[in-house]
Length: 86
Image (cartoon, rainbow, N blue to C red; front, side, top):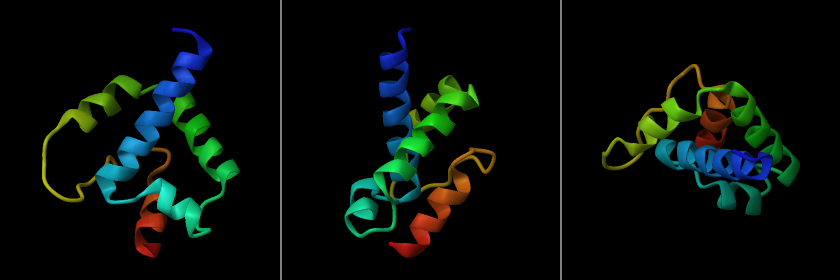
């Protein structure tokens, strides 16, 4: 997988994990809770974690409303903080 494809995948995995937790990344950025640089750092953190396939499996699980994400996700604390703000 090329670097751009990997970054694109982790962009969507990061957004997906946020959505699963009930966090709207676009809204968080619009409201000033998250900067573009913060989000870029989250994508890089996701990319360097090395568990993309696991996260894709988590995101494929069906459910209604906000659901838990793995607590060992390297973006867990940022996402749970954003959830508390929204």
